[in-house]
Length: 227
Image (cartoon, rainbow, N blue to C red; front, side):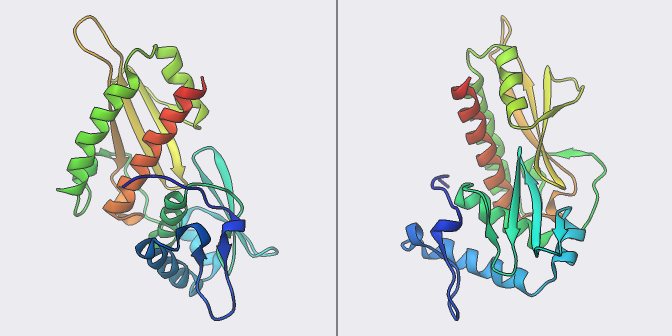
């Protein structure tokens, strides 16, 4: 999947009797159908319930859900599920799917690969390989200080592991993504692997999990370019 395009409140039309659609995505019927279905499912639930299960904050006085994603606070206006941010359109759809699927399950802090996700044997395993290849290219000739700074700019927190650097990204309130990096030495180039927590299946499907991984790789690339 190619990640492209931005979305903001100016690019969304909601009229009485009509469903939400993107002006710049009229040719993408599959995307619109997924977006419309996600909004319809969420509109049948209360903001309080969604917030309790997802870790978002519901402001009843304004009928707004507030959710952190990466380093940004995003406000979602109910019942239309407008957003106040020009995040990538697939990021937005994944966020809605997260709010829809979230059931409040807490993980045991155990890390798993994408291939270990439910139904992840094919799609998840393929992404694990692709991510390692992309990370090797992305990390090539990058010094450790620059790598750490790029991760920090995306809101990452760092933990001690056997890897040279372990960055945990707050992708969504109950959906952290962990990046382990091994710096280059005389024998091997720099490498990296992306992990999820063992409760990930309670919040996103494998397809959405892969989308999250792709967005992270893109944001890392942009972060390196901006340094």
